[in-house]
Length: 348
Image 1: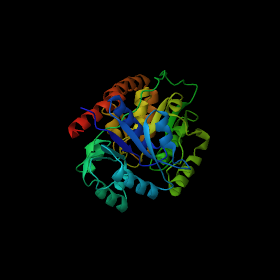
Image 2: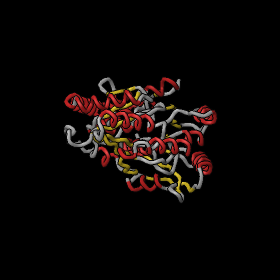
Image 3: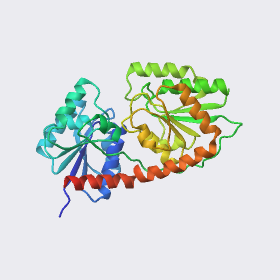
Image 4: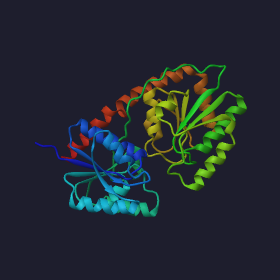
């Protein structure tokens, strides 16, 4: 029996977290010997970023020229109605809403619909969908009728875990969008507390940008960072491997609920110590042996960082346990098994 073809429709032409997962899903389908095509917008100003990367990785790509989100939605709906064969995997709310009401669709949300408009789009998007997927049990619990399909990430080089030298600062790391929702304010306050207790004992390697962040949150984050600028090394947008190779501990201090927490899983695979907040699915990702602190609590974060640095043997033991958890739950092998089980359950 010939496997039914699948197309994965993108939310955006530029690459963010959801598009990273799109490429991971496409790779899983390819490894399962399923015919897969990436459907993505093309155009100027970064609109072709995903399409170009998918082609570079050897995937079949259907590019639909579009200069705006609304045009992309119109083009995608028309293509889906006239040309699509097999099942459409809608990777995000935009792709799902654009094809609302069409048959043989998997709707995959990576973020909880927030605004009233997004909620209305979601209710329309799931009409006649084969299944609605979300990335965590935490998100499933607040969105009845959905199914959890946990994210996964590629393996990365294992760091040489060494006890931070007493003669050099403990190197903290942050990777992600520079916004207050991601906990920049909490992290800078915690860093200030640490510097008061141990002057010169801690530095922060800040990796990320304000891409996809509104102006108000960007301004607030920049104000918070200026308060500790003498303790911060700004790296800009660098790869996860580059950041993780140069730090002693990663902080994921999100204030807003996370639908998954991919950066925490990336630290787990690299065996880099990680401390997360209790926002959304982050505790679910790191599991019972993960180090979790209350969101928006700088004092708790500072204390957890101090404890990790001062009790290094236990910290290293945790990294090995979290690496094992990644292998079992969030590795490409685990992700591929979840995709195979989903398709078998759907009979497609």
